[in-house]
Amino acid sequence: MNVKMITRNVVATGCLLFAANVMAEEKAASPAPAPAPVEQKAPAVQPQQQPQMSMQQQFQMIQQQLKSVQNKALEQSPELQAQAEALDGMMAANFKEQGIDVEKEAARLTEIQQQASSAELSDDDQKKLGTEYREIQQRLMVARQTAMESEEIVKKGEAFRNALLEEMIKIEPQTQAMIGALQQIQQLSMQQAAGAKPEVKITQESK
Image (cartoon, rainbow, N blue to C red; front, side):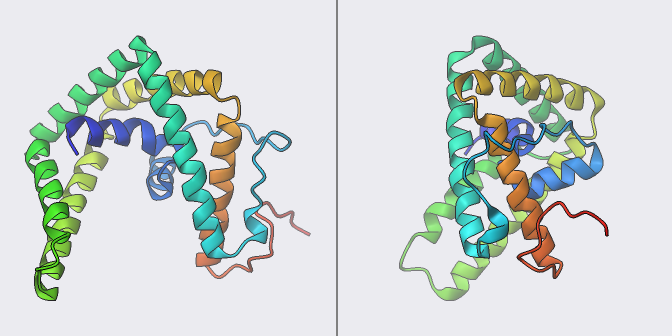
Protein backbone atom coordinates (compact mmCIF):
# COMPACT_ATOMS: atom_id res chain seq x y z
CA MET A 1 0.00 0.00 0.00
CA ASN A 2 1.26 3.47 -0.84
CA VAL A 3 0.17 7.05 -1.40
CA LYS A 4 -0.85 6.46 -4.99
CA MET A 5 -3.00 3.47 -4.06
CA ILE A 6 -4.74 5.40 -1.29
CA THR A 7 -5.39 8.63 -3.16
CA ARG A 8 -6.25 7.09 -6.51
CA ASN A 9 -8.67 4.64 -4.95
CA VAL A 10 -10.31 7.54 -3.12
CA VAL A 11 -10.86 9.55 -6.28
CA ALA A 12 -11.59 6.85 -8.84
CA THR A 13 -12.50 3.60 -7.19
CA GLY A 14 -14.78 4.90 -4.49
CA CYS A 15 -16.72 7.06 -6.93
CA LEU A 16 -17.33 4.15 -9.29
CA LEU A 17 -19.12 2.25 -6.54
CA PHE A 18 -16.27 -0.12 -5.76
CA ALA A 19 -16.96 0.69 -2.13
CA ALA A 20 -20.61 1.07 -1.26
CA ASN A 21 -20.16 3.07 1.93
CA VAL A 22 -17.81 5.55 0.26
CA MET A 23 -20.29 6.07 -2.57
CA ALA A 24 -23.12 6.67 -0.12
CA GLU A 25 -21.12 9.32 1.75
CA GLU A 26 -20.05 11.14 -1.40
CA LYS A 27 -23.54 11.08 -2.91
CA ALA A 28 -24.89 12.69 0.26
CA ALA A 29 -22.22 15.41 0.21
CA SER A 30 -22.07 16.20 -3.51
CA PRO A 31 -24.07 13.73 -5.62
CA ALA A 32 -22.51 12.83 -8.94
CA PRO A 33 -24.70 12.07 -11.96
CA ALA A 34 -25.86 8.48 -11.61
CA PRO A 35 -25.62 6.27 -14.71
CA ALA A 36 -28.90 5.75 -16.49
CA PRO A 37 -30.71 2.55 -15.42
CA VAL A 38 -29.88 -0.33 -17.71
CA GLU A 39 -32.42 -3.12 -17.78
CA GLN A 40 -31.79 -5.36 -20.76
CA LYS A 41 -28.00 -5.08 -20.70
CA ALA A 42 -27.62 -5.49 -16.95
CA PRO A 43 -25.90 -8.62 -15.66
CA ALA A 44 -28.16 -11.41 -14.48
CA VAL A 45 -28.21 -10.02 -10.96
CA GLN A 46 -31.52 -9.91 -9.14
CA PRO A 47 -30.57 -8.92 -5.59
CA GLN A 48 -34.16 -8.62 -4.39
CA GLN A 49 -34.52 -12.39 -4.83
CA GLN A 50 -31.26 -13.35 -3.13
CA PRO A 51 -30.31 -13.78 0.56
CA GLN A 52 -27.91 -11.29 2.13
CA MET A 53 -24.81 -13.48 1.84
CA SER A 54 -25.52 -14.10 -1.81
CA MET A 55 -25.83 -10.36 -2.40
CA GLN A 56 -22.46 -9.80 -0.77
CA GLN A 57 -20.89 -12.42 -3.01
CA GLN A 58 -22.47 -10.87 -6.09
CA PHE A 59 -21.29 -7.41 -5.04
CA GLN A 60 -17.71 -8.63 -4.59
CA MET A 61 -17.76 -10.46 -7.92
CA ILE A 62 -19.01 -7.45 -9.89
CA GLN A 63 -16.67 -5.19 -7.93
CA GLN A 64 -13.67 -7.27 -8.96
CA GLN A 65 -14.79 -7.22 -12.59
CA LEU A 66 -15.02 -3.44 -12.53
CA LYS A 67 -11.61 -3.14 -10.88
CA SER A 68 -10.14 -5.26 -13.64
CA VAL A 69 -11.67 -3.04 -16.32
CA GLN A 70 -10.47 0.06 -14.49
CA ASN A 71 -6.92 -1.26 -14.34
CA LYS A 72 -6.97 -2.00 -18.08
CA ALA A 73 -8.29 1.49 -18.81
CA LEU A 74 -5.49 3.08 -16.78
CA GLU A 75 -2.81 0.84 -18.28
CA GLN A 76 -3.69 1.62 -21.88
CA SER A 77 -4.33 5.37 -21.58
CA PRO A 78 -1.33 7.67 -21.03
CA GLU A 79 -3.76 10.60 -20.67
CA LEU A 80 -5.62 8.89 -17.82
CA GLN A 81 -2.31 8.04 -16.17
CA ALA A 82 -1.29 11.70 -16.30
CA GLN A 83 -4.60 12.77 -14.78
CA ALA A 84 -4.26 10.16 -12.07
CA GLU A 85 -0.74 11.28 -11.25
CA ALA A 86 -1.93 14.89 -10.94
CA LEU A 87 -4.72 13.84 -8.59
CA ASP A 88 -2.33 11.73 -6.55
CA GLY A 89 -0.14 14.79 -6.05
CA MET A 90 -3.06 17.03 -5.11
CA MET A 91 -4.42 14.54 -2.58
CA ALA A 92 -1.00 13.89 -1.06
CA ALA A 93 -0.36 17.64 -0.74
CA ASN A 94 -3.73 18.12 0.94
CA PHE A 95 -3.03 15.28 3.38
CA LYS A 96 0.33 16.88 4.20
CA GLU A 97 -1.38 20.19 4.92
CA GLN A 98 -3.60 18.33 7.38
CA GLY A 99 -0.53 16.92 9.12
CA ILE A 100 -1.08 13.39 7.79
CA ASP A 101 2.05 11.51 6.70
CA VAL A 102 0.44 9.13 4.23
CA GLU A 103 3.66 7.28 3.45
CA LYS A 104 4.23 6.60 7.13
CA GLU A 105 0.61 5.58 7.74
CA ALA A 106 0.57 3.30 4.70
CA ALA A 107 3.84 1.68 5.72
CA ARG A 108 2.46 1.04 9.21
CA LEU A 109 -0.69 -0.55 7.78
CA THR A 110 1.44 -2.92 5.74
CA GLU A 111 3.58 -3.69 8.79
CA ILE A 112 0.50 -4.46 10.88
CA GLN A 113 -0.84 -6.81 8.21
CA GLN A 114 2.45 -8.69 8.22
CA GLN A 115 2.62 -8.85 12.01
CA ALA A 116 -0.99 -9.99 12.31
CA SER A 117 -0.25 -13.05 10.19
CA SER A 118 2.18 -14.36 12.80
CA ALA A 119 0.91 -17.40 14.67
CA GLU A 120 3.06 -16.44 17.66
CA LEU A 121 0.96 -13.40 18.55
CA SER A 122 -1.29 -13.62 21.58
CA ASP A 123 -4.98 -12.76 21.36
CA ASP A 124 -4.27 -9.55 23.26
CA ASP A 125 -1.58 -8.51 20.78
CA GLN A 126 -3.89 -9.35 17.89
CA LYS A 127 -6.57 -7.10 19.37
CA LYS A 128 -4.08 -4.26 19.87
CA LEU A 129 -2.92 -4.50 16.27
CA GLY A 130 -6.51 -4.57 15.08
CA THR A 131 -7.32 -1.47 17.09
CA GLU A 132 -4.29 0.40 15.73
CA TYR A 133 -5.14 -0.66 12.19
CA ARG A 134 -8.68 0.70 12.49
CA GLU A 135 -7.41 3.94 14.04
CA ILE A 136 -5.07 4.52 11.10
CA GLN A 137 -7.83 3.76 8.64
CA GLN A 138 -10.07 6.23 10.44
CA ARG A 139 -7.41 8.96 10.28
CA LEU A 140 -7.03 8.38 6.55
CA MET A 141 -10.79 8.41 6.07
CA VAL A 142 -11.13 11.73 7.88
CA ALA A 143 -8.25 13.14 5.82
CA ARG A 144 -9.96 11.89 2.65
CA GLN A 145 -13.24 13.55 3.59
CA THR A 146 -11.44 16.83 4.29
CA ALA A 147 -9.51 16.65 1.02
CA MET A 148 -12.70 16.03 -0.92
CA GLU A 149 -14.05 19.34 0.37
CA SER A 150 -11.47 21.07 -1.81
CA GLU A 151 -13.21 22.56 -4.84
CA GLU A 152 -10.13 22.04 -6.99
CA ILE A 153 -9.85 18.36 -6.07
CA VAL A 154 -13.57 17.80 -6.63
CA LYS A 155 -13.42 19.43 -10.06
CA LYS A 156 -10.32 17.51 -11.15
CA GLY A 157 -11.77 14.34 -9.69
CA GLU A 158 -14.98 14.65 -11.68
CA ALA A 159 -13.05 15.18 -14.90
CA PHE A 160 -10.91 12.14 -14.16
CA ARG A 161 -13.91 9.95 -13.25
CA ASN A 162 -15.75 10.90 -16.43
CA ALA A 163 -12.71 10.17 -18.58
CA LEU A 164 -12.08 6.91 -16.75
CA LEU A 165 -15.69 5.78 -17.12
CA GLU A 166 -15.64 6.59 -20.83
CA GLU A 167 -12.48 4.53 -21.32
CA MET A 168 -13.91 1.66 -19.27
CA ILE A 169 -17.04 1.56 -21.41
CA LYS A 170 -14.85 1.28 -24.52
CA ILE A 171 -13.20 -1.78 -22.99
CA GLU A 172 -16.33 -3.27 -21.43
CA PRO A 173 -19.70 -2.01 -22.78
CA GLN A 174 -21.42 -3.54 -19.74
CA THR A 175 -19.62 -1.18 -17.34
CA GLN A 176 -22.65 1.01 -16.63
CA ALA A 177 -24.88 -2.04 -16.29
CA MET A 178 -22.51 -3.50 -13.70
CA ILE A 179 -22.42 -0.21 -11.80
CA GLY A 180 -26.22 -0.21 -11.87
CA ALA A 181 -26.25 -3.73 -10.45
CA LEU A 182 -23.98 -2.63 -7.60
CA GLN A 183 -26.34 0.26 -6.89
CA GLN A 184 -29.26 -2.17 -6.72
CA ILE A 185 -27.46 -4.42 -4.29
CA GLN A 186 -26.39 -1.46 -2.17
CA GLN A 187 -29.91 -0.04 -2.02
CA LEU A 188 -31.48 -3.36 -1.13
CA SER A 189 -28.86 -3.98 1.53
CA MET A 190 -29.65 -0.59 3.07
CA GLN A 191 -33.38 -1.40 2.98
CA GLN A 192 -32.83 -4.70 4.73
CA ALA A 193 -30.60 -3.07 7.33
CA ALA A 194 -33.43 -0.63 8.00
CA GLY A 195 -35.87 -3.49 8.48
CA ALA A 196 -37.45 -3.62 5.04
CA LYS A 197 -38.80 -6.94 3.78
CA PRO A 198 -36.31 -8.72 1.45
CA GLU A 199 -38.95 -9.51 -1.17
CA VAL A 200 -39.93 -5.87 -1.67
CA LYS A 201 -38.51 -4.51 -4.91
CA ILE A 202 -36.06 -1.64 -4.86
CA THR A 203 -38.24 0.85 -6.68
CA GLN A 204 -41.70 0.97 -5.23
CA GLU A 205 -44.71 2.87 -6.47
CA SER A 206 -46.95 4.55 -3.96
CA LYS A 207 -50.46 3.20 -3.96
